[in-house]
Each structure stands twice: as C-alpha cells, then as structure tokens.
Length: 178
Image (cartoon, rainbow, N blue to C red; front, side, top):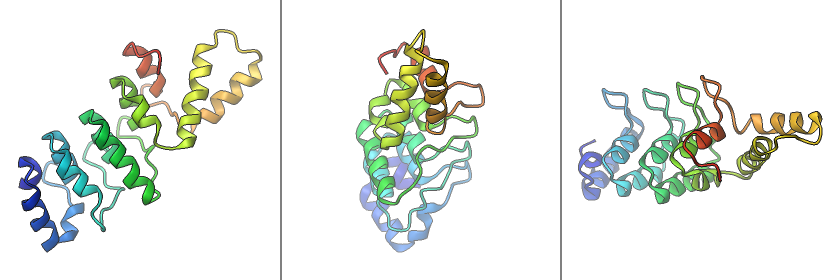
C-alpha cells in the first residue's frame, strides 16, 4: 500500500514479489492497490498492478468500482488504454456498473473521455454509435428502427440507477460530439 501511495516502483516490486496474493486485497477503507495508486497519481504503479499474473480483474472497491472506473476517474488516457488492453487479454467484461449503476463509459462521457473508453470493444463502439444516432434523430424513419437501435444498444449502454445512459452524461457535460 505504501508503494502505491508514494509511487515507489522498487518498493512495490519487492512487496508483491514476496507475497503476490496481496495484489488482490482491499485495505481497511475498501480500496484496491490499483485505486490507491490512481488516486495518488502514480500511473506507473497502477500499470504494474495490471500486469501482475494473479491479478483478479473482478475486484471492486467498496463503492463497486472496477479498475476501469478508477482509471477513468484519473483522466489518464494512457492508463485507461492499459486497463483496456490488460482486461482484453484476460477476456474481462469492462462494462460492469458500480453501486450507482454507472459504467466506466458513463463516467468517461461525463468527463469528455469517451474516445478512450469507447475503444473498449467493438460491441461497445457499435452500441455507442447506435445510441448517438438515436439521440441525434429527431424523427427516426420508423418506430421500428428506433426500437431496434435502442434494444441493441441497451446491453452496452445501460442506464444507471437514475435512468441516465453514458450519452446522457456526455450531453449534460456539454460534450455533444461524443
């Protein structure tokens, strides 16, 4: 934990090479070592965490946030891509909502980072494009086409506990190009 707070890679490597299972532990505040590193601006430590062999990508912090949620909160585009690449290599679903029902994409849209996060997967990109078309169309050609767009996008662009989708957050933040 101290290595993540101060950003000391040598200390991190020593601590986790001696006891690799600790990489998956949460501290008394319910924070993962990845979350601690990102909160303290140490992307180098966070990146090291991502590539630990026994890392469990399903770890959520006390607030239900995943590694990608925390990377998005850091606004570090390189770190976001590192999380996406590491998770893709382990076939991990990155579209997991937190306790508020918000996905990493919804936070990214709110922060204007959708380009980085939308690159998570082709289905997510497709859903984003479909939902964007739905929102931009004031008069869809047919009710069926709008319904089909909404249905196919729902899985990858879910509404949170407040009923908002990632695109809603983008629009509310003034990011209408999303």
